[in-house]
Length: 513
Image (cartoon, rainbow, N blue to C red; front, side):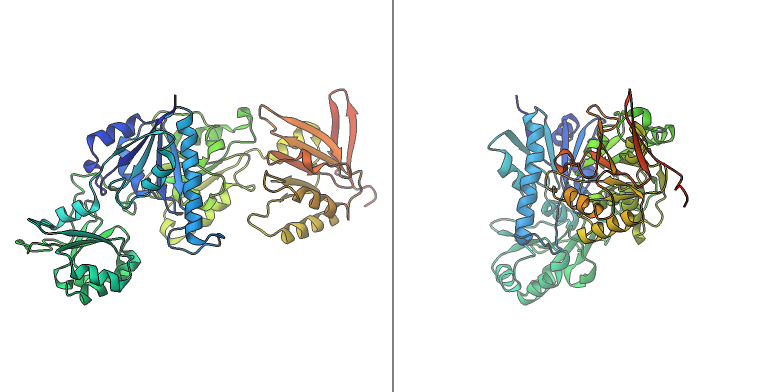
């Protein structure tokens, strides 16, 4: 049997405004899914935090773009459509496996929400049900403490992204209005309010129901300081109480703080390396750090290598969002969590340590401590299986051209080959990236003999481990995939046969040199 998709409305921000039904279903779900921008901070997950339980699978769906530009061939809309298709398939895999999925939505799932895009793509294949939530319009109206409409009056809900002229016309012809999607659109919204003669009757509510709720006359708002989570209301009835009654509502004494920028004592981020695959290769220091962490952050495959622990939250994501994953870890620590960012091998070798440290240099994370705990590298693990091919000077080079151009990769290969050093080749190929291994071989053959030993180690320490020794001239690119690490010998690298197989070593002596 397939699982069920629940579209869970969380309300405007206060966790106590989550409905009883929504709280129950969040706690019962096998999978909890939520959206965020690239910074990795999810308002929805923060609201739902009190209702999550240990052991749940979390699907963090990161938008590729929000307001920034994109080089996607389909432009902004093409990037977003592709994202929704991929995100829907991630959830479909869980549903097809029989898991219940709770997809979180701030406010109401069908009111200016991302949930509806997923519903369109999944509801025709799987059982889907929606739990409505309190909208931001209702929360903002409550913050004003005055009715929005009464009697026969009409309430019009408008997006602030509308052209100023159209927004002006709509405001002229309605008794009451709620204007959503502010942020950078606020200057145009205020212009439309002024042009329609409604500015004097308009009120601004920021972060309704949260600990940082603000209520102001729209005319008094600094347009340079307007977040996306704000709304303008134009009540139909004439208010009978003073508005705003107060600028900031302090709920800290009674309500859990869901604001992601709240000032709390920071925790820490520890970037750990699990080693290449065998659990016995994970150091006791790393094991202790994993046990002490309140949150684990990492690529899904690596997170799955860590045994589950009651009460520990797991934030698994795709392997191509290193910066977003780092920002999420740092933000969790900024709010008091003890976060372990999980890498395979050693975190400082083509892994998460550099990404976390780069993001940690941003001003907002200056008070978050970051530690790096080393792990056994894949290069050393593969080398150990055949002897000591890295017994003398060697270099580590990644063939991936996702973060650097191939010209740079080729230049470095040529320089290291000319320097007569052994080379450990990381990320040699993937399902979409096949030609680089052949190109690497051609570059190296300009400096190395065809008889140069080459070690191919695949899934070393894992259940499908295989290690083979060949030569540079006979290296077949079709034998290489993303789980393979290559070691290319130097002129002093030698091989010899034993009953246990071919042994390889690189001499520490250079003859008469």
